[in-house]
Image (tube, rainbow, N blue to C red; front, side):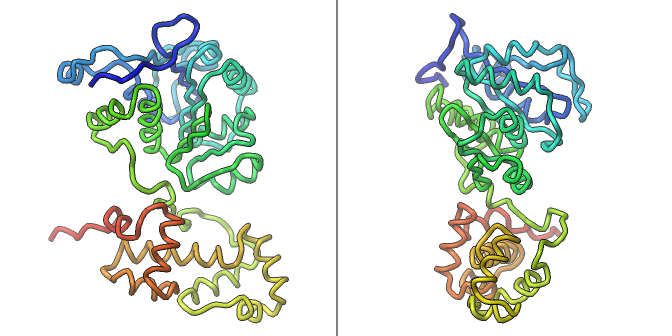
Length: 338
């Protein structure tokens, strides 16, 4: 397990320095992902692979010299924020409260690092910290799918792609939910040291270097607890009639407005076109049936209103990023052991 190349270093250093920003509500598991993927190799693995040295130096840093996380984890003494400003890569792990205000000192340090040419990385809700520092404006990015609405509302200049496990936008990289941190870490490893090397590290970690599909396959809107938007009763009616043939004229008649008025009100209430919303809901219904039943895909297509298996497959792959068959294989509930 030898890398095909070495990562870029700066300031005359022998190793590529990765500064990991630790804040009071950092997700400890995502800090550990950086340490595990880029830090010193465990002795047992080093003995088996012959790789005893990492090409990276991982430095945990923060605004305080020591920080016990909300989860109770204490990583010990932290380097000062100067480590962020001089690092080759800066990683902002996920945070437990992405919507919380952040210290302007932390935002300033992130901006200085970006101006100095550091590769900027966030995991999960860490994207909110990069966005508040202005580092995602005009860029493609992702974060945990649960916070899509909040992120778009607060950062309209960011091109959010919530269906992706991770997004590579030049010097800025962002990932989705907690376990997407490993996906992005391996992607960065491939970028620095070669795909073969990253693949070997993935094997040691017992994870695929590239998982099929994206974050979209994990989305389940009913997890969120929120009030119904405007048109709530109409949306409830629509959900009950998704299996039927639906036309814009028929829907407008249902709510006693013109087609143009329905289009305008629907987009204002949901941020989507009428039929984009309908297709999203039909795919959501198909996901439930794929998880919980043995119906054929053609049967599921008819049950959710797509009419044909081909139409279901096309919309499913576009929204979820994987095939209906692969989704079923991943999420189908295992039979109970009797």
